[in-house]
Length: 359
Ligand code: 13P
Ligand code: SF4
Image 1 (spheres, rainbow, N blue to C red):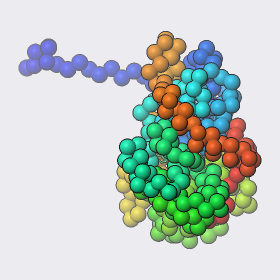
Image 2 (image 1 turned 90 degrees about the vertical axis):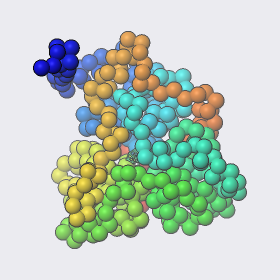
Image 3 (image 1 turned 180 degrees about the vertical axis):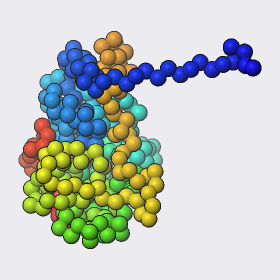
Image 4 (image 1 turned 120 degrees about the horizontal axis):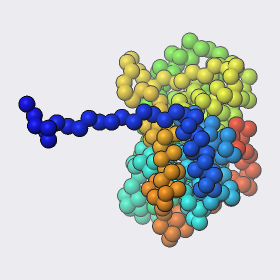
């Protein structure tokens, strides 16, 4: 018989706080910290609703960056993944940027380490370096331009028209799409998004046969054979706009399932089907939901804010000042370019942008 010293202590599982109680605590903490919530469409619907209800925004990466930069609040709370928090901090170095958890990263960011990327760029000094927003501050600091999925096509077209050869990182599918659409000379890094990479072209064809009138909306991080079946290719905001604009009653959506919350809210009479991620059988990779976006929750957010109130800002984004200044140049270049093209606010969010158009 084990001695009392050997008997493991029972694990006490705290009862989960009621969502309404959590929301009340979060709102109070946000007021005391002069905070605004900037959320991505892939995070939990409760967080998206809270951002809308408290004067924050739910948007794509471009609009999250612009909204945070332009909002007067002293604290930006970014519900999304780390590169989004870093971009907010780079654009607003004097604001405090908090996240529900700093553990939320992105496979594109992880797949493009700054040192290797720097060496790759050094091997090709004749090329203009264009990086996707889903990268670290250090990778952005090595770039001439940053793009998001909503600005990529226009920026690459613009550089190609100026006769520039491009080095693109990290998303290979988005890179191939931009290359095919613009005819630009692009050297591609081979990163990918673990969520969009899972969409299956053959299964999508079968689903389209079952729903012949459905329009197909595809995020450009998806494989080429999936993009080839799209009626509209675009950023998350652009796909939401397409779902509203197009006459169809049914849509097949190839992006993270988190976006269904806003799609169904905005168009309750329309049917939205998830594009297939499983082949013959489902696997644990078949959920079409970003595991890092899923780390954002009401309870994590409450914990972050209440810790900050106690002076323990453990989930605070910090970016070295010098690095931030270097990373800011290519981001500002993109934002100035988008402003000149009048990339307009979205009707679904506080902010938004134009569609990329059919594939
Ligand atoms: P958007 O800028 O289109 O929202 O994309 C961000 C992202 O991480 C998609 O996976
Ligand atoms: Fe990164 Fe993909 Fe998650 Fe977007 S969905 S944050 S690209 S891993």
